[in-house]
Amino acid sequence: MSKALIIGAGGVASVVVAKCCQNSEVFSEIMIASRTKAKCDALKEKWQDKTKTVISTAAVNADNVPELVALIKEYKPDIVMNIALPYQDLHIMDACLECKVDYLDTANYEPEDTAKFEYSWQWAYRERFEKAGITAILGCGFDPGVTGVFSAYAQKHEFDEINYIDILDCNGGDHGYPFATNFNPEINIREVSAKGSYIEDGKWVETEPMEIKRVYNFKGVGEKDMYLLHHEELESLALNIKGIKRIRFFMTFGQSYLTHLKCLENVGMTSIEPIMYEGKEIIPLQFLKAVLPDPASLGPRTVGKTNIGCIFRGKKDGKDKNYYLYNICDHQECYKEVGSQAISYTTGVPAMIGAMMVLKGEWKKPGVYNVEEMNPDPFMTALNEWGLPWEEDRNPVLVD
Image 1 (tube, rainbow, N blue to C red):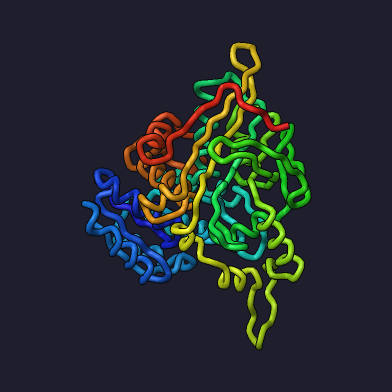
Image 2 (image 1 turned 120 degrees about the vertical axis):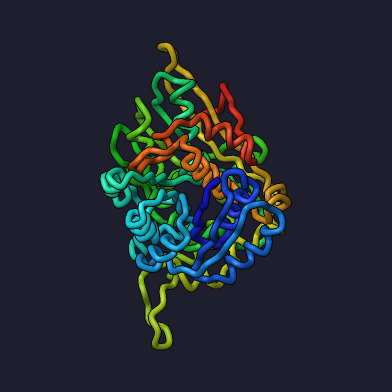
């Protein structure tokens, strides 16, 4: 019986709340806190009559460490689940350190004024969390998150050494809009418009945005164009998985999305550099976010499936081996269960599971950790129990 403070009230947070409420034996109490308390109250209203979990709400500015500290000290949670923006990771970690409470997030820190994300800022907290006797779990969504657990599972049970990992993120869903993003538009567009990169022989290899394209036939979805992107879990997996020679990350995009994105880039709407408009400083990308559909609103109209997983190549007992672990998730099934599309669902469910791992002592260890550093087995079991069953292919089609 534990208390969790959930910071955030967007699409992913709504799934986290729903799954915690389904798991009231572990999450006996939750508090939903966000800058906009009305959003928290709406989530409480939606779930409070359907669960034994006691739900409370609060307003908090996640950029304000003293405000966070005051809320944590008042509520006294066993874990803080950071489902806010990645710009706020360090503030929330600072508050957790001051209050000596465990921490979990779904995406690594990203400076608000620079389109760059890496783990160095959060890894710098390792010694302080260890000395405080508290646990921080980084990147516990799907990618990063489940992809790291898949990698740890493959390393533990299927390989003596893993030489190549290709992470494939396919969204075969259709929401009917000419252009919309399936998660926070600001984060999504910064990620997609940045230069791509992958790790080979221990070094980063940089590519132009969308320079490398492959076509892959995904089970449950069909043939899709996918493009190589930079993604944060490459950095940690390269350190934590034995024998790595190359890791790449691919994500699927339709032509309509890419055409709209290129037009927006060409006219400056994806820029994060401030401009003056009618005497006020605005950031074009934040203005674009305000006029695009809210990802949390896409659930009722999104049809199709996602397929996200990892193709591994390595050696077992001296022989070459290929192995593919993946999950297929249906947008409409997610909406029926929790009122969200599958992108939010595949991020929110692992966040709940990761917090449960910490609260039950399975992943309780002082320090700052990426998920692949923990025992994957109980997490893999929980994926099957809580809505993200995994599948495996021992003779997969490889990516060239």
